[in-house]
Image (cartoon, rainbow, N blue to C red; front, top):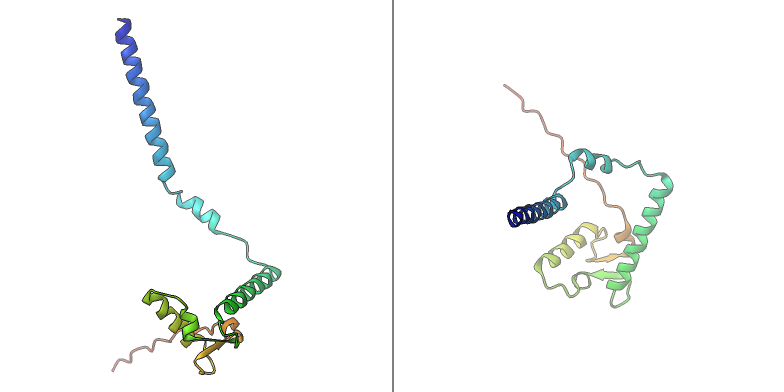
Length: 133
């Protein structure tokens, strides 16, 4: 009788341990409820000082990257310098797209001023209402 009780107790213990471990693994893999996500997503708006600090850090990062890419030191980044040692065609396409978007004077190279300039926002095209006849 004692052996039977010990066997049952052992089986219950092993079963509970396994179930608890599985529950813990499930909880770790679960995503947080939407309500918690919304609370974290809401952040107070940035102050003017914070905006200025972010802009300053962004400009410094661009300047550092610019100097690292400018291999010949002439103050301009050509398409070859932008591509660098990129082996993937996607990287080359991004470099071409960047050059096309930022090169305002059309000389085929980017200056530091062109790189740090804020992108122009495109105004959304207004949809014309179809005239009924």
